[in-house]
Image (cartoon, rainbow, N blue to C red; front, side, top):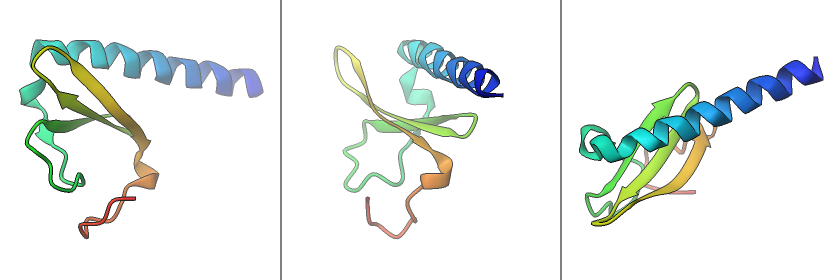
Length: 81
């Protein structure tokens, strides 16, 4: 059972990493992150399974800011954790 869990976790990790590589093809197609206070308009997010991947679009690169399991989502009340 423990091996199955590790294998599943490895698959999730690989898929999240793979999906971030696709960001360079069109990061603006993803929604702005509504939970990020004072979003300057370049912090976006997308979902892969139960994970929210938050990234920032810069002139010469894309930075992954966070990967959060959706069970840990902040409340949409304007406060960040």
